[in-house]
Length: 258
Image 1 (tube, rainbow, N blue to C red):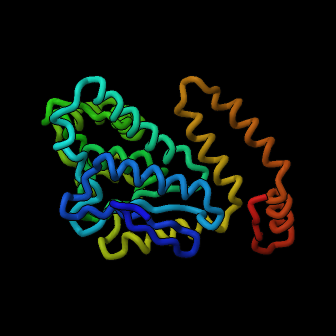
Image 2 (cartoon, helix red, strand yellow):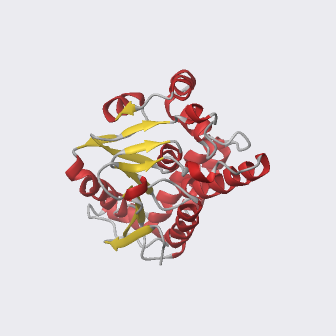
């Protein structure tokens, strides 16, 4: 189905593996096109409750963009490429179903940007993060300057991007860039277990939480008003009735996403 991805659906979680290990899973235009299709599948397939994005092999999640594609680009073509990448990554960020990055190795440049577009990140102890674009006379173009600042703050973001340093997983955890650091052989099972916990919650409420958090980062949206509206919409759902009744009856809720 995809030229550069492997996919597998297990217990409601759609595992998306970027499969270019010989190229350190670098993002090229084909990978971006395949990712767009895979994210569309997450949105449209009712059997998918969540997704994990990871990289093939032991070395890299995504070790940047395919630099060979940059050499012939004009400024206009560069803008088009950045626009395309940002649209795809924003669609990941806006997904009403959780999409989690399981970072198994190098997450550099576009790879770091992809991981940051996901709703949260679980990292292998071997993972390393960075935005080294200044080494190439470039800057991040797929939202990296914005999301890195949101996640770790202005000072640390500027330092990391200007030095082009790589951030080890433990330091990424202390800086707030990742949520968890785990042993390499437990990365996927740990991430899947987290998502199984989320699967037990009300799907519409899960999606609404994601929308509200994203609204907090949108300068054009009154996040508090957005939250009031989203809160009120919950009262029109069968899931709220089921959740409240289950709580009162001291039993597990059986949510249907209605």
